Every structure is written in C-alpha cells, then in structure tokens.
Image 1 (cartoon, one colour):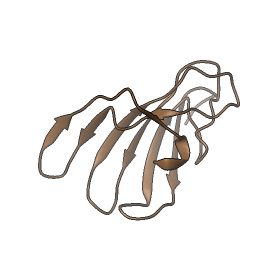
Image 2: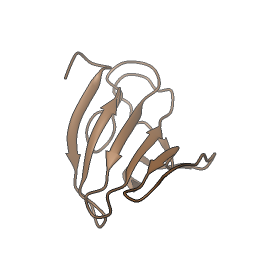
Image 3: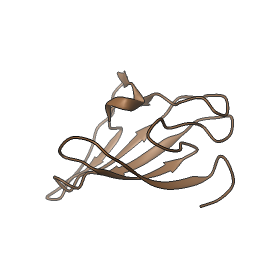
Image 4: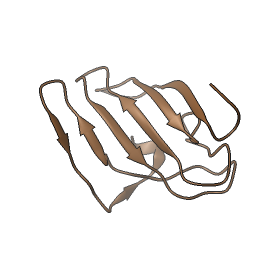
Length: 94
C-alpha cells in the first residue's frame, strides 16, 4: 500500500484458526521481511475464531525477517483484552 517500510496487506495461510488476513507495518509477506531499517509490527485477524492480534517486531535491517512477541494486544470476538509478554516467537509460528 506504499513504499518499502510502509503498510502491506496480505494473507498468511496456516492451520486453524487461520488463514490469517494480515496488515504488516514494515513487515511484508509470510516471512515478515522488513522493507526499511527499523521495527516492524503486524495486525493479524484469525478467520477461525474472530481474534484480532497485534504483534510487535524486532529492530531489523531492510530485507531481514522480523521476530515477533506473542500477541502484545489481543481482541476477541466476545471481549477485548490486552496482554503483554517478553517471550518472542519466530515469525513463522504465528
């Protein structure tokens, strides 16, 4: 939706509760590559259970994949809640 390092929209296929329609902020594609140097983040919707989760990513060089913390902010179909964690997960595990 813009130049490298901006907002990207794409679908990440995966097991239930996916697939995962995704908006990436300086994070593109299923490998979550940085389009420009700096931090990245993604909003990911889960088709199977209605969750919308924001993940904050690492500070990376352009072209490098981000690692993400597991679900920094989560919204569920029935209620909204926030959670924070310091346990990063591999980008491929979302």
